Figure 1 (tube, one colour):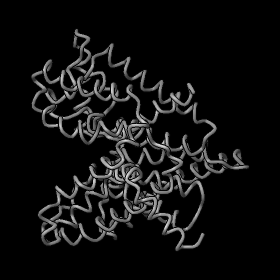
Figure 2: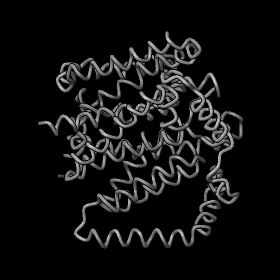
Figure 3: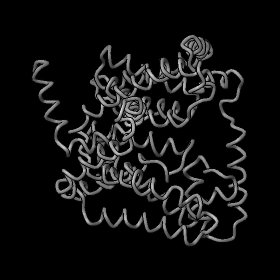
Figure 4: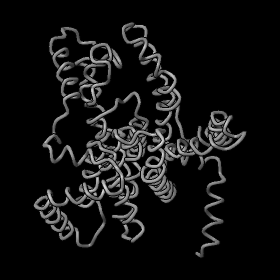
Length: 399
């Protein structure tokens, strides 16, 4: 297939509203960059919000009948139950009312609907498209960090002195997607894109996404990557890890100098050399306070969704503590065990399917694992996408 034929095929694929829904959902981070560009365009810049809603809603409305065929009544019941649970929490826990109302729109419209994406997704159909979107996202992020943010910082429009945790977690799924493609089939451009993505995670100055990426790459190389020499691959991977660990200080020093010369944040490396990689005073205080309150709590009902805001004015930065503090010991443990159960069942179901299993692990790393370090499930669209993806695998297993 020549370039012209590929281009025509790509245009035909993108022109279908049904496909556009999934591509927009996966490439939501690009809408942020589009907004930044559109805001500087005369006339159109005054209609950025309206245009963004059109970009999102028009494909959904045009393909609604086809989308509904992939979704069952039980999916609607689950989403409705999540919404009702959220609203009931507002009524039962008035101390959380302000923070819950503040997130009601984003949870209902921007986060929860990702369950529908996960439960109806055919990753084999969208694998290549997701990869290309992720490549664009990484290079757009790199351009922003290396060019725009640095130039804008001189005139005070952008502050580059602080680390960008939100951007790091937003770009994480795309870094994992490009890494998966690069490790699946080696190529110069793929390897460069993967390394650029990993460098971005390091330069954004937060540890959680870096750990998630390392875990994903290690699991893929050791247990998933198809190869005739699987045992050799595992030995080589472990040997490389041992060598890298042996020269870790030199490698970290080199990366620190590189990121500094590029004008990017060196916070990640600074904390490593200061011996603070395993500590975070702010988050340690948050977790200690919430655990102390949880241990002294005689009730089993918990403190409600986002109830931690009444004690530490933020979320727990840990999904286990988040569930236990929100729903109480009994219900929280049941929910966590149920979540682990469907994740394990999904991995077992796709044990012989490299694409489906790899994407499942990608979702686990970029949602469940990342929620062990930061954020809350209320704000994490990928978490609900993971739930839908797992439920979809269970249905296939029944069939």
